[in-house]
Image (cartoon, rainbow, N blue to C red):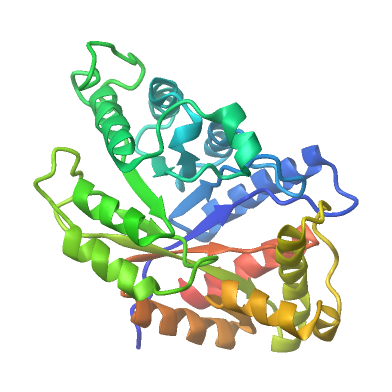
Length: 333
């Protein structure tokens, strides 16, 4: 039997049709409490901007709220898109979180803007090229060290001093995999929406890994892989609930700005070509009954060689998402 590795959740705080933003955030925080009780290892919040169906913009705020309402689960960013932020500001925000919730905060960092080009121009605060990204991470480690001073300038974040916050590199590309390895940091691969050549990317990360890098926090490569998951009592019900995710992706591709839509019969989703596109983007998934999902998760664990999995679940009805999480915990833990 395949070893059941740690399971985590990535939350984008989706907003359903007929739901207010406040209600979506409250549902997300309720789910955080549930995940804490169920035994999930980590809960990460993504950073997205200019997206009407998501409320995960102010990532560090959500992390603080979720950490306050939970007791055990690690809470972090999946991730902070570093080019959108001044690194010192990130150090101060996460340093504050780590002071309040010691040994429970993760900092996942990415180079993508998490939005469109126009919005990115309004957010950009630091360079997105590999060298600038690496330099910013080196400074962050200085601010989180016992000395509390950046490596490039004699400036302290004060609140970050001594927190030694774990840093992860998030990526969907081969270049990101190489950067994560060269920096000697754990790697979270976005297989949940970029499944192409994922094994090649993981192998590249492992071969590029340098435990002697000045930024290294771990001695051996460590991989977390993303997967779309939706559990329901039957395969048929799960497939119908999954159509909300399919409609969400199709809306994103066609530029249709609307909130998450209710499930429909699977054959009602787009054209045959559009369904094929959705399947190609979200092919890394475990959707179905508990037995179906367990098998899919075990198969992906074997194929990817991941050390941890992080799941993404969209549902129109928040109660269906909570039920999925409960059933997922029952079949995996």
